[in-house]
Length: 448
Image (cartoon, rainbow, N blue to C red; front, top):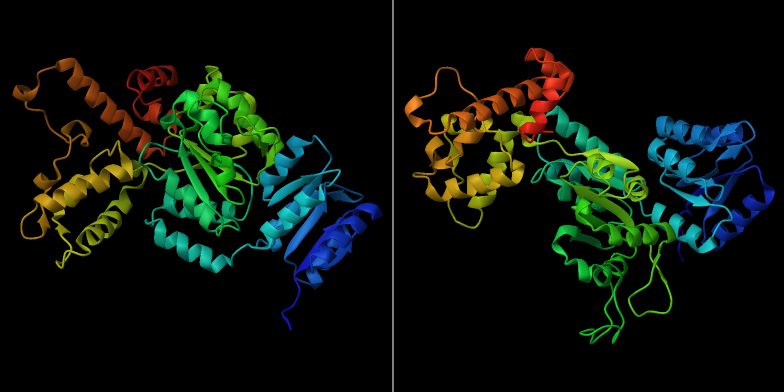
């Protein structure tokens, strides 16, 4: 006999018919329900008891569901809240997700979708386990990394679509995996796909699947990426590389929560959380009409920015130590250590390839070094990406004055940006440039 306590759901709605529908449906799921007719009653219940999920209507007699979401975020941050909105109120739903809501439902309530949402929300892991795992996987104690870990912790407790921005090699896929692994979909598939690596003529088949005989070469039924990710997370890496024709089809799949395979007669319902990333400026892609604005709004409900390695130089020592220990595993030898000059060289390097480049540099140096000590020369860092040092350059080493001056200009501008936390106006003032001149130089140097 199962004697474990039943999970408790708080229902907040002023319509008796809606409350009754939710109570009956959740009761059949072996869940205890508690109902409130307005914001005041809901807050009173929250003071007296603890709940595992809250379902709230957007419009309440004495306030809004958004106010309740904000109240719960401040006083009961571990409690997932789902918003119930009128049909077509997408903007309201997005505002709720940005405020911290777990997910949303539209009226009239689809009972299958309701059961699916409740089941997912009640699988939420304990917060302590989440923080421990994120700390272990996402190394670094710099302020940008502490902020990133906090954001991932919050985003894992939501079903909102997330757009992950950042430079190549900065760790965007790791951030996506952590959001998935620390959330309620952790036991379900995480399906990453590089949108730029799929031939355009194969995209529809890859995303939505195909039926046997639907085209030449379709010798068997094949499920697509959406079907493979059902119940879990689909991570669209380099999403800006999708052709416009595929963007239309992707938007429809996200809106309808259903896909039709090539040659199929019926749509298949899919329950997928969408995370996406690109190293490109998605706003600029929209402005240039290479990326659909309506798809952008669907994907970019919440943006998560992964900092570059240049923005967290204080983490380089800890990252390098961790990577060197991992390289030594299985060799039967102690990990190599960095000579102080080698560590200083790493801290002064721009790392255009970010963490991925640091890994490659250390792997090469680990192989080349003598006596388990990595010297600065073992790193073989590209001189063009080393920090500007004081003093004059050796003119005998300069074979292209224009390229050399451009490189110096790039280093000085990057240094000013880093020192001002990438505030372009402040960086321009530091360099005694007008903002217009600064913007021109950033574009010319490929830093915009």
